[in-house]
Length: 67
Image (cartoon, rainbow, N blue to C red; front, side, top):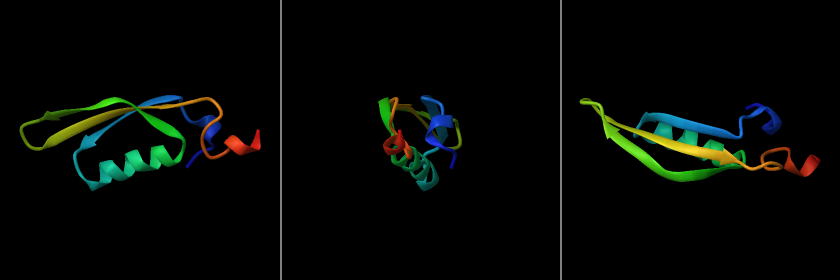
């Protein structure tokens, strides 16, 4: 993935409520993001869709120790 300095400080992940979505959120947590608020959940008539906001504080992430 990109350097932490190139990543946005705020992002919202959306997708089907499945293992892939959980892995995407976990990857962002590993990069220094923190969960922001509760997840949103809806049903689109076919499957459950979730959204989770994440924020990355300044000086966090994979390169935080190199500054």
